Image (tube, rainbow over the protein chains, first blue to last red):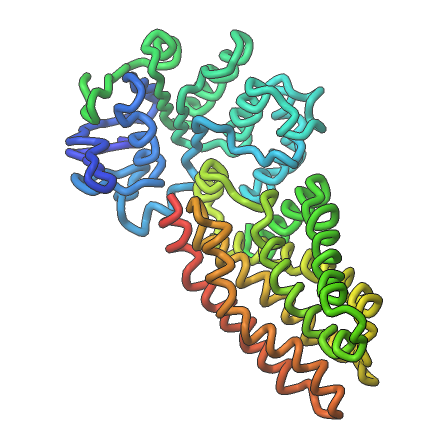
Length: 211
Length: 223
C-alpha cells in the first residue's frame, strides 16, 4: 500500500512558487531521504506530507486521505513530525512535556519515564525544557515520536544538534515505524547525513524533485 | 481523549507554565495595583469623586489587564506546538476552551487582588449585599478570558499582535464591562442584578458559540 502519493503537486505562497510539479511515491516500509540546499522547499514539502499545508495544484494522498479535503483530519494522528524547532513548552519539564502529549494522545502515562530513558534523558526528566541544551530538546522531541507511534514519521534536519549517540535514536525511530508497516521521511541539506537513514534519496531543486 | 478531558489538560498545562513563569502574579498584578493607585493621586484630595469612581476604575483596570493576562507570553503557542497538536488530532475548540479556562482563573485572581486595593485607595460606599455582585463578576471574568483568547488566536503570528488584539477585544468586551459594573450600581439603587447577570451570561454564550465556529478555520489559517 502506498503511504504517500503526490502527482504534479505544486504550492504557491502569494506569487512565489515553492513547489512545482512534484511527483512522489512512498510505500510501506520505505525510508525516503529528501536532499537539497537551503530554500528549495524541503520543509514546505514536509508540511504537505504532514497534511498541514494544502497544495495549490496537483493531487495527492497521505495514508489514503486526499490532500486538501476534510478527510485529512482523520489520518493526522498517524503522522509524527519533528521540525526545525522541537515542539516543547519551555516552562514545562521534559517529563511534563511528554506527559502532556501522552494524555492528549491517549497513551499510558506510565510509558513516559521508560521513553525518556530510551532517549537517555531519565536524569533530566525534571529539568525545564528552557534549561536544556538543543541536543537534549531534540532527543525529547524524538521521544515524543516513540511515545505516539505514528505510521508516517517526518523529520526535518533530524541530525542537527545531535551527537553520535543520539543519532542512534533517529535510527531507532525509523526501525520502529518500519516495524509497524509505516514509512519514514527525513530531509536534510546534507546528502551525506541522509545515507544512513534512507533507502532512497531524492533531490529537491527549485521546488522540483529529481530522482 | 474526549473534549472535556482535553480542555482540562490544556488548562492544567497553562497553569503549570504560569506558576513557573509568574507573569500574572509577579508582573501583571503589581502593575494593575499601580494603575489603580494612579488615579486617586491624579485627582488630589477630592475624596467624594475618588470614592464615586472607585468601582468604575476597578472595571477599567480589570478589562485592560485581562488582555495582558489572555495574551501572556507563557500561554502562546509557537508554530511547532500548533503543528504537533494538529497531528495529535486535538479539537481546536478544546484548546481554545482550555486556554480560556486558565485565563479566566488568572483574571479572577487578578480581580480578587484588585478589589481590596480598590477599597483601600478609593474607599467607595459599597451597597449592602455587594457580595451578590460576585456572580456577574465571575461570569464577566470568564467572558474577558474568552474574548482575549479569541483575539489572541485571530492575531496569532502577526507582528502587530499586541496592538491589534486589544482593538479586537474592546468592542466585544463592552457587554461584559457594562453587565459587570452595572450589577454593583444596581445593588446601590436597590435594584436587581439579574438583568445584568443575564447580559453577561448571554455575552459568554455568544463568545463560546463564536469560538466553536471559528476555532478550526483559525487553526488552519494560522499555518
